[in-house]
Structure formats: C-alpha cells, structure tokens
Image 1: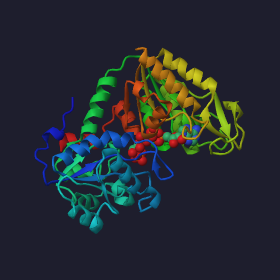
Image 2: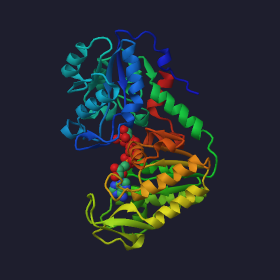
Image 3: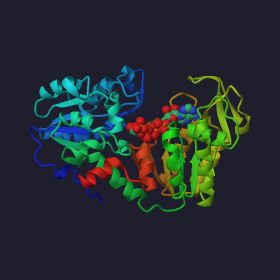
Image 4: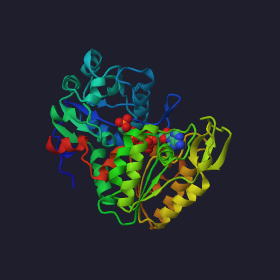
Length: 399
Ligand SMILES: Nc1ncnc2c1ncn2[C@@H]1O[C@H](COP(=O)(O)OP(=O)(O)O)[C@@H](O)[C@H]1O
Ligand SMILES: O=C(OP(=O)(O)O)[C@H](O)COP(=O)(O)O
C-alpha cells in the first residue's frame, strides 16, 4: 500500500509546468541507446501528463560526470530516443537551470514535452543544495517523481524538489513499489540473492544488511573480485576495489553470523584485453595470471549458482555476472538468466531482478518477460530489500 500522493491526486494540470524526474540512465554504445526499458517504463507518466495539457519538463541524470558539463554524458541522444519511443516531439535544453532552461520552458505550449540537460552537470545536484534546487524549481509548478531507480539518492532533483513544489509519485514509481511489495514483501524461503556488476563501492555497504535477509548471497561480476582479493586470491588486472577489502571481510563475517552462505566464483573466463572476441581461457579462480582480467564467471561457477537457484524459492538479482555487453563474456549471465527463467516458468521460483544493465542483460538473454518481476532499479531495489528508507520515496510520503 502506498501512502503518498500519486498522479490521481494531482488535479487539473492543464497549462501547468510539471517537472518530472525520470531515470534515463540507460545503457548506451556509440551514442545509441542499447536498452530502452527505462524510457519505456516512464513513457506512460509523460504521455498521461501531456495528454492532460501539462507542459512536461523532464529532469534526469546520466552517468557519473564529475559535477561539470561533459559531452559524453549529455542527455541529447536520450531525448531523441525518448521522442522515438513515445512517438511525439521531445525538445531539448542545453542546461537544467538558468537562461537556457527558462527560455526553453517559456516557449512550451500545453501538451509539449521538454528534456533538460543532465542534472549532474552541476555539482550542487548531488549535494542537494537549496539554491540549486530552487533554480530547478523555477521550471515547474508541480513535481512528479517517477525515478524509482534513483530514489536511493538524496539529490536535489530526487529529494530536494519535493520540499519546494507540490510533489507526487509518478505511475512507474507507484507501480515499482507495489510490485516489489507483492513479490518480495514476505518472500518465500530459501531466498537467494545474486549481486554482481561494476558499481562495487556504491553497492558493497548494502550487502552488510542483505546477508541478514537472505539465505545465500551469490557474489559475481566486478563485485566478486573485491571479495576474492579480500580473502587473498589474486585477481590480476580484474576490476577490483582493493581498498574495500576490510568491508568485504566484515560482510563475510556478518554472513557467517547470520547463517547466510556466501557463494563466490570457483572459475573465471580470463582475457588480457577488454574487447569483443579477445583471446580468453577458463581458469580456476586461484590461477588468474598477474596480467589477466576476469571478465566472466566460468562454467563450474555457473553450475554452482544454478544449484543454489534450484534450491531457492525466491531469487533476487542485481548486477550481471560478467561484462555481458562484449561477446563471449555474456555466457554466464545468459546461462543463469535462462535457468532462473525456466524455474520461474515451472512455478518453482519467484524471480525478481533489477538494474539498468541487469534488465539489458535479461533482454539480451531473451528472458526478461519470464521473470516474475523486472524492476528498473538496481541499487534502489537492493536498498528497498534491505529495509532502508529511500530518500526519494520518503519525501513523497511527507510532502
Ligand atoms: N568481471 C567484470 N569486469 C568488468 N565489468 C564487469 C564485470 N562483470 C560485470 N561487469 C559490468 O558491470 C556493469 C553493470 O553493473 P551495474 O551498473 O552495477 O549493474 P546495474 O546497472 O544492473 O545495477 C556492466 O556494464 C558489466 O559490463
Ligand atoms: O542506474 C542507476 O542505478 P543502478 O545501476 O543501481 O540500476 C541509477 O540511475 C542511479 O545511478 P547512480 O548509481 O550513478 O546514482
């Protein structure tokens, strides 16, 4: 049950400027969106408001620029992709505050859609600074937050704006929370979680609570390398955050106390270059050469993970098991995704997966529709699972 205001409470929006926070942090390659799920999920909120005659002003971040403009993190190509998906023009303004934003908003007619440039081009966004939030608020009369997958960030555009403008949950925000509650509110045990991917430093802390909620935690992808290194296994040149070794050790101790099994790779697919078709070999995890990079989990690891999934009643998954965008390093992710999908179809498993790249990986494996639920959120979903308050959601409850 949601306890915040939704778009059903928003009233007449005709002629009003509605600032809509969406998460358009989508996978891209060569300037093209490679998985449009996040855009498709927020499309209903955008079109509903536009159809009701609102001036829809979209706010979003893209990637992790260092608090200043960076062309490779521009939202302009994403605005084009959004326009194609919703089948309507989406104008673009080269800044999210100031004159450029004001001019573009000033030109809007009722029912128009405008996307403002990456909010993270201003360092004040992530600091949630009041003056910056007020500058953002100048473009809107109302605020709709539809970015569930960014709701774990207390940023100006995800949290701050709800203190300044009348605030509502968008259709996707509402649907995500309801679906997660339905699928995982009271999960059937055993619960197995898989956490992989590359955002090691921003996700590792939440594993400390997660091990108290699940029966087994499978650690894969870049995250696994940090744990392997922490227990003294050499990972060569693999993606690894060595300075997080103590955190990893602490998590392994907490897991043992909570009787949560930690499942780490036993073999890996190792290459010397991070590129498609790079020469590679499967090696035992203790045998990674000093110049090798683990880019995927090996077949024995896949077998072990699938055994755990076979015993599970509920699966929670964020983060690919390898660099799945580059063949052949997608093999483990695809194999595990297919097995989890088959278990779900056979009614043996409730499977909930989430994250921008995880969704792309499930689409790549052709099984996203076979999972019980696929969330657009990765980190936010895991924090929700941990039982942590999400700033972007909480502020809507009290707004
Ligand atoms: N062993 C690995 N080495 C390097 N990158 C990896 C490895 N395993 C997974 N990745 C990368 O992790 C990225 C996804 O991580 P993350 O952003 O945490 O997931 P999500 O967006 O689903 O939350 C993918 O781009 C993938 O290439
Ligand atoms: O892609 C996102 O999160 P996810 O990788 O956990 O799915 C969100 O857009 C949040 O991005 P951030 O982790 O740079 O704050």
